[in-house]
Length: 139
Image (cartoon, rainbow, N blue to C red; front, top):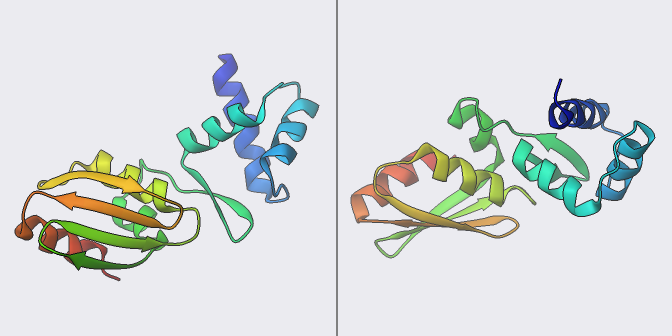
């Protein structure tokens, strides 16, 4: 098994245990298992795996699963602003996962996304696309 695959397998095992509350803890635990990773390496791995920190725990949100079940559970609400913008409120720390999922889904009429910590701005090409997106994202 390639090094990256082994490293990710061990990282996922640690995350499933739910005991580690920080990236420093993850780096230390990975070190104990023979993987020397910096905090920035851990951060990149978590982002690539779709892991977010919610309520003090790391949670895997797979972007390969169904968009509605995997990502909409992270959405707290959405509102239309003007004719070309949708503002989405997410659970703390989940905005980048939601924005990435929207980008990967390539919804017709979505120009792009910008994510903060718990807010996503979605630019749409027209009000019809905005309405379609609101219908999908409103809980």
